[in-house]
Length: 211
Image (cartoon, rainbow, N blue to C red; front, side):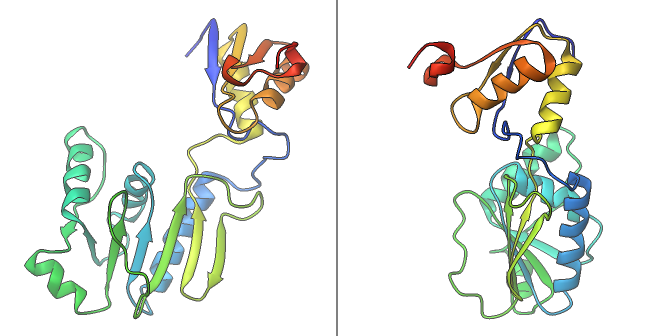
């Protein structure tokens, strides 16, 4: 979409924030990890809203086991399905079929905002999905044989952000200075792309003579 002016996310506005893997790579590694760990027991996946639905899209039709979730998360996913999002069906953990599945070890259990997860798993693997970059070279962090983190970030990295800004044709850019690197990104847009840019005024910097 072409724009005259643009407000852009600066979560990865630093030139050191460049991923050496694609989000397709991260999704593939996540699916491979889940599939492998289902061979040793259940898999418990925790993520925030949005990321958990993305994970369900990746898993749908690819793992061959029941996917359990709370009543609240099942209703939430139902809204996504209603509006055309290709996410698979969930089974309520508290239903009869859900309770039966929990007696075994061949299932995936999802946890999201407001869900209580077990402090200690008696068996199985815990995977936390991060909406942020964990490492620039590797999407998966292994804490133990039963504990992992996978970066399924919806934020563009530094290079992707600059490419997006250039593609919009915008002549004036405001970088979100609430978090991340709003000042650094604004300077990079000015210096690298020759486009007028400044950080948002909530945290203006001395580079612009304020603060």
